[in-house]
Image 1: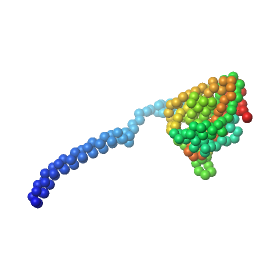
Image 2: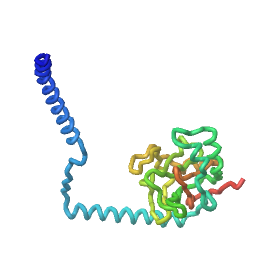
Image 3: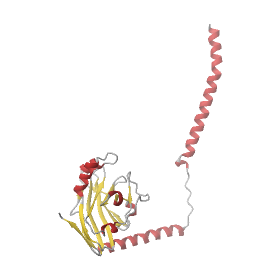
Image 4: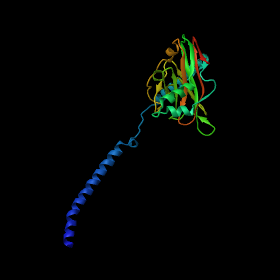
Amino acid sequence: MDTIQKEGYQLKEPWVTIIAIISVIIAFLTINGIFKNQSFMRIAEPDFSKADIQKVKKDEVTLKKEADNIFSAFKELKYVDIYSGSMDTPIGLIRACEDKKRIAEDCNKEIAKITKILTTDPTITKAYLYIKAGVLIDSYSFGNLTKNDSIYFYIDDAKQYGGHLLRSQAVWSQINNSNIELLFDLSSVPFTHLPYKDFVDPDKIPNIINVINQPEKHFIGAFVSTLGYGRIFEMRIGYKGGSIKIDQN
């Protein structure tokens, strides 16, 4: 009996050894492949001259100067405040309009509550949208929007003229301790979608000036899209030519 068991053990042992060797080889090949594909295995090796960096720095200064000039010109335009005072994003709006959980009827009712009516003299030649916004970062203080927060802006038809404003493509911006200021040229407003990512190409870039130059009333609004607590401190349109008024009724 002992002999049979011993022979059986001797017969099985080579197969166990072979299987073990194959397993080690497969594991080695798998791990080797994973490590070859890992980004941390890539070595950075820049190749630049002083002139290259100098050009980048000069371009940055030039772009900032151009943006500051645009903002200075904006401040000289006629303007209309969309919201009189600040506007906090309603909790009910976030719940009813939450991405992939939207309740259409409830969401529309919440949007209607924050929507303002514009009446325009359709001879506007230039217009900018200015927004100052922030999110609550602790019990008492507001700060800049996080990478996941966004500002949703719309006029009349959300599918055509609404979406999450792409902050990286504002014509001027400034980050403060308690908020961010953004300026968009209404002739080419860059919209994106959720999940919000700042450095992407816009989904659409509609000309909102063409919209407000239509001789009819317009529905306009915006809110900070966040799962926290968001606030628009200021929102105004600066414009040249014609006139824009908020209908108080």
